[in-house]
Length: 200
Image 1 (cartoon, rainbow, N blue to C red):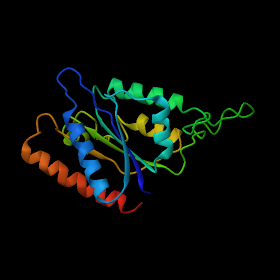
Image 2 (tube, one colour; image 1 turned 135 degrees about the horizontal axis):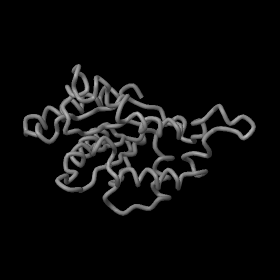
Image 3 (cartoon, rainbow, N blue to C red; image 1 turned 30 degrees about the vertical axis):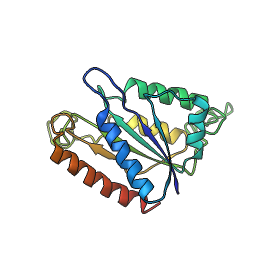
């Protein structure tokens, strides 16, 4: 699996300039190109053509999503990108139907995707510390990012046929974004990329 499509889903909004996810995107590109992967990218803040974006999903062996989390959702611009691109991909390589038949509509929902054989990896960035997800009595009630806030995002990718790779979540990015911590983030994330892509 040598063809990687990287999506920077960050955007400028209020006090957020999207800089951290731009940095993470650059780390990903730097690592994958150093390993001779073929890379295509999209920054959702820039203009894009829907058909070209559909073609990138169809072309890729692996899709890497980078997104911040705002109010416990992906940013509105990233959501619109996915809504528009996936809809444009109907019968063009992303999905053909919801998988059901009119003769037996109660089963097989979510099996009409066309991106089988592809994998995806998600990174998220949070103001929340990791302990907010793990400690008893803390905000997320010991529910992980993937089983909680990002559950629907993972189901979306399963719907179109992609298989999940282990993701990476950056915590305490706003209050903890010191130069030292950014260096630790990069080191830990690069290790994650090495472990993830060596198995593909």
